[in-house]
Length: 463
Image (tube, rainbow, N blue to C red):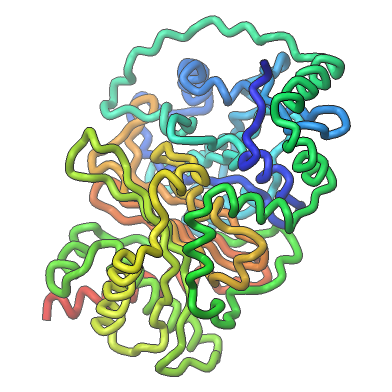
């Protein structure tokens, strides 16, 4: 039988349009070792590890007449050098130039006639650095067992682990007749799916989105419990092009822990409080009317690893009103901590098994939690996505090159001008801010304000 996309995964193909590409990205910065870290080494590394991620050699094929959901098939013309690409900045390339390149690359949709991923090696950075930019379509992130190429290319030692590369022989691509025959067989077993597939083929976006939400009723239930719609915000705009702007902010995990120790709550509460302060200053810099009751509603999916290593990951998602109207940073933090506790106690958090259905659960792709939970309903429900994924606190390497920083690139939902991803790694906390090019021309200003907001909170911890 064919490897058919789930209804949820297929919906991300149907929901994608020219203005809102549905891929999740990441930017890893590496320090070049003496032995070098170049394009050929990256290609060799990925070729050696592709057997660990067989989906990355498969493409999506649609069934004639769209009578069934698409299927995954081996790409007989798979060419790793098409997917692993090379780019360079004029030496010495700085952060601003890198961020402009990231924005341009993330603005381009993936080629749906090929496996839905790309990697770019960026050379020419200052301080003997190299960057690796990854793009993976959300349709590929299909459950708890899924792996992402950025995950399997990393090692815990400068010496790459030995990986036996299996000889790959693509399975023959099914004919149109075979695709239809398999679809008919599936329809006989599940006749109700025919109506859904015809609806999807007509690209009925609203109904498709509803199907996404109904696929995990717990989240739909949690959404309905929201007492009021999301407040009006310049973060909710009509997106008119795929063009983006990207900026980053950095913090130290020990600083966030010191703030938490002084004032209580969790590290995630501190992150949200810092973002609240930054968004407050950003609104004021734009001349927006900010009163004591002004809030910005964030959807904040959380991945929490329990102390017991065998317990796996627990995932919760929250709709939280960030208190941007509050001028006192400590009071903002207390408001956030109280709101997060209230969600847990009221049952508005999404159960792990429900959210896993909406997420790619491999650690490097957990930022897809927020992106996949977003939809064209987001304008009514929340103003901004904030994904916070705790990462490993030990250094990681690719082909002997040490990874020094990693920034997530969370895609924009429809009608949203900003998505924020946060990742902790090896003692650092890294914020990636992905914004609409027209609506967020000052996204770099907001990124600077994030760092200033963390410093403001640190001042209260050391006082």
